[in-house]
Length: 502
Image 1 (cartoon, rainbow, N blue to C red):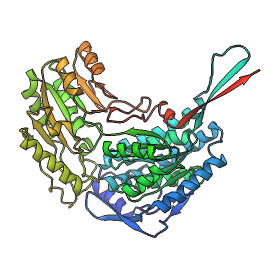
Image 2 (image 1 turned 180 degrees about the horizontal axis):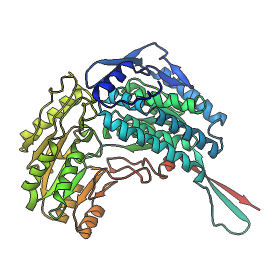
Image 3 (image 1 turned 30 degrees about the vertical axis):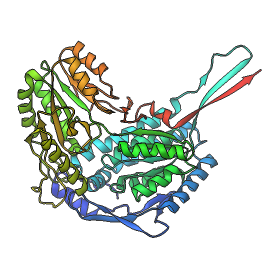
Image 4 (image 1 turned 180 degrees about the vertical axis):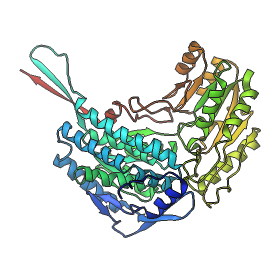
């Protein structure tokens, strides 16, 4: 589907465009659309309306085996793995260009599939994916091997070689972004890839695979298998002919993948998992800016964000005042039609997630937290789908369930602290360590806290900071891999030493 000359500007325009869009209702194997060998399908729903977008192949273990054989053949042939880095770069840059050309179509697919606001998918997710692929492609022919400092008469070469066949499993909350984060370095390094999107949100992954083939990616190098998340994912993770796996998702599933790697061939496993990030506000901060970003950190993407600032740590002397500021800035975070460019908060992924959010809210109230904002599912959109109010709890103790477990919904827990040492103690009282932020105009306080909190990314007077140039990942049960930056290439390559005596 080519982009129209006139871009949509309002909800009616996007609704009309949605009625005409072609849904990629297939798997992508060996450079072309494919059905499941059994012919089985499963529905793909629009979470904003509850309607079925399409019936997609429900791929099973036999489909996985066939795709792995194709990926292995492509890798062994050298058609991509042995291609000159500059040639791989040209194809990947062309791929990024095609994604950019189809940005409205891809943004719309993401909005329909995930329930995210069209303003976010068009202005954040699609440009981010383009930049990830383009930046990584440009780096391919600028990553050098090494010559070791050996004695005279010897020469030691250290080369960086592709792993082989890589399994990439991506989540439903940011499918386009995480697909780009996985595919760009995996393909840049010369691997073949089996991509398993979440069965709830496979559409943009399939469109990206189609465009990759159009850009010149050889057949069989990238294969996309929608299907049952549990059985298909387990079979692929246990597969003896997959050399590495990368996963973004829940900590529980990440632990299973580590087990499957050990039970099979010790495939290299890189995980970006859950979070319960601390957003720490000191009394000397720019309080209005911090409150604005506290709302963004908690409610962006309906809180379905592994880096969400769901633990809001507020210094005791400003606790009540900051709660009022936070509530004021939360008023604009109301659920609305994802196809309306003015909507900031779209749909929750499905009814099961709504139920989970509601269960945690009930637990929070039962354990003594004070509900000061929201707390209910939302029915005011008129769309019939899955929506939830922005929710804020006050008087939260960090030992409460809502402060310890990842809810994956628009629920923020406000926790008081006394000083920097207390803030660090509370922030680190978590099994997770993915993200966080500290707000203070005292650089000594800010850096002391930023260095003291055990987390993969820490913002100072900002939240959600960072770009493709810096690595992303976590400590503890937030995982062990790193997406983005040149560091991501380490996950998808092996080091080989060649020792020469002369």
